[in-house]
Image (cartoon, rainbow, N blue to C red; front, side, top):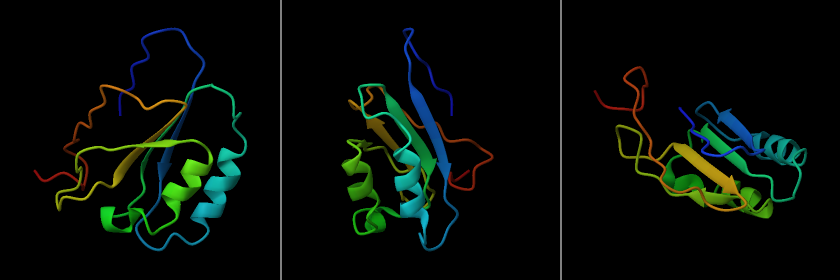
Length: 112
């Protein structure tokens, strides 16, 4: 996924892939990972294929965990051929603007 930064700045970008299936220890591991980053105003963006269908996003505990680190969920259009939003974006301290997801033809998510 291309990322454009339009001004000199310090920022953190985390790219996550969670394979399909139960979350298991994933939330504990995310909590440990996010605890490493400063809680100041340094921008943090998490991009990832969480393989978490939209209907399970709220009940999974993921949004609550990321909210506890002041990360905002950026609502995107569905990226899966069956209409799910599996590719998620979270930002801190403020939501990103002018964001689009460009399907790749090599992805198993996009219908060709």
